[in-house]
Length: 268
Image (tube, rainbow, N blue to C red):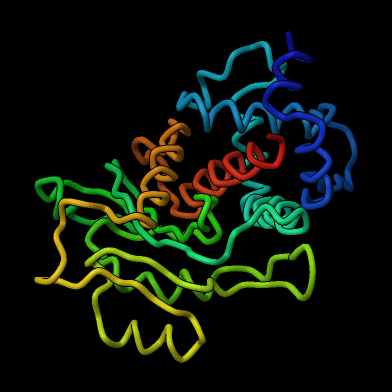
């Protein structure tokens, strides 16, 4: 059962990429202790927790390791920024194959209920209940290029510049690496003159919906892809509600979900 689970959740091509970002195992100068579980089995267990939404203690015994071991390794790899680096590697693979379309990108956010932790705040769209917000920029096909989290009461407009600056330099099929969208689409939450000026100063064309001018009934021909990606992120059930006290752990699960979305396109 273990081999089948591991192969399904951490397939060979994803495992090969992860080996390039996983930090070396810490050494024990005093020796002794239990044998360290294999990284691939732990990776599969972490992906299972992310996609199923179960707690660490509910990890099935078929993985051959405890939830405590999986959580400890998850924390270790999160501190080493392994998840963000894995997401970038998958984007590089897609870019080198011409799988990214930079012509029209879109930006949006989604709020989730939060039980505890930093970077939480009253959600203005959920009766002021405590929540966090996921921000993302996607390419024309809906592949997430940049991610961020904040308290639920942070205005969307404040996330645009950090998100745009957070797009890593990604490989292209031909030419240098790229990190700037050809055009960026956003809803009325980004309707601010300073954002338009900032985008224009960096050579990024923009199409931000205008308040009091455009109808809110239609999402737009080019902005609907980011809503579809938000729906796909919800396939990672650990993101339905934030249980993590530390914001970096919640961001790590967001990066895992984005990586799986991009990897799925890579293997299509």
